[in-house]
Image 1 (spheres, rainbow over the protein chains, first blue to last red):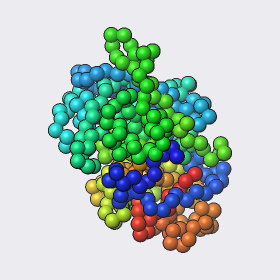
Image 2 (cartoon, one colour):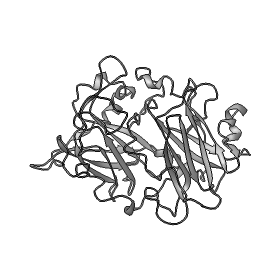
Image 3 (cartoon, rainbow over the protein chains, first blue to last red):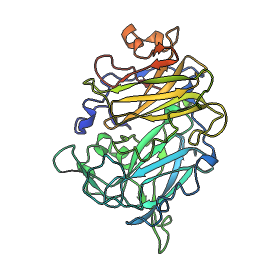
Image 4 (tube, rainbow over the protein chains, first blue to last red):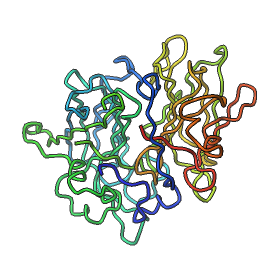
Length: 221
Length: 162
C-alpha cells in the first residue's frame, strides 16, 4: 500500500481525526467533476515565487539549495502547467507561523513559502535554504526530520496530493511517526530526495532531485 | 510508483491560504451562494487547523490564485477558523454537487467528499444508507448552504475513494 492508513496511532493527531469508516469506492460517471482540475494561468504565479531566498530585503541564513524534479502521472508522463506549492521551516527549524512555539530564531529574510507551474516536461524548480529539524510534542523527545512540504494538483481533482520531501540519510527517519506511517519501505524511500551533482551549482548551491508521481485517475483504469 | 501522501501538518497558514481563496465570485455576483459549516473531530470538537478546497468542475473565467477577470472561478481554498468554521462564496455548480477536499494535521491523506445542494436521485447518494446519505446533503437556508464535515464517529461524513 502506497499511502498511509487513516489511523496511525503513533502519530497521535490521527486518533481523533482519522475517519473510522473506509472511504466509499464508487464508479464515477465520465461527467464526475472530480475528473477535472483547475487550470492555472502563468500570470497568476510570479517569476520570483519559486525562489524562497529572494522574497525579502536580505538573504536568509542557512545552506542554500536547489530542489527540482518532475511531476508525473502513474504512466510516467509529465504533467504540464500544474501548480506546485512548497513550504517549510527555516534553517533553525522554525516556521514563520504564529502557532509555532519552538524557541528557535525566526529569520526576517525567510517566509518559507513558494510556488511555481511545471514546464512542458513536468519540471518544477525551487531555490531555498535547507530546513532544520524541529521538536514537536507528539511524544517524549520527538523530532521531525528536516522536510519540505509539497502540494501538487495534477489533471484531476482525484490526483490532488499533499506530501513531504525528506533529505537523504537523515538519522531521524526511524523515529518519525509521520514518515513511518507509510507502511511500505520502498514507498517511504520515494519521499526522500536524491542529492544530485548535476543539479548542484558550483560555488553556489547543493542540488536535490525529487520527482512526484500522482495516482491513477479513474478514467485510466 | 506513486508518491505517498503525508499530512499537511499544523503550519501551512503562511503558505497555502490566500486572501481571496474563499471567494470564488466577486461581491454582488448574481445567484451566488454561501457554503459554510464546521469541521469536527471524533470527540465533536472543532478542528481549527483544517484546510478545505472546493471545486466546481470548471476553472471559470476568474483567476484561481489572483481573482482577476470577470465572472466566477471554479476553485476555492479556505482554512478553518479557531472555532472550526469555514465559509465559501461561490456560484452554483452546473450539476447537483460540489467537490470538497479536507486537509488537516492528523489526516495523513486528504479526505474527499461531495456537498450536494439538495437531495435527489443520484448514483452516489442512492448507493448509501439513509443516515450516511444525509451526511452529503447540505442544509439550505436561503442562499446559505450549511455543510459540516465530521471526520470520525457519530454522523461521520461519507468520504470517497475514486
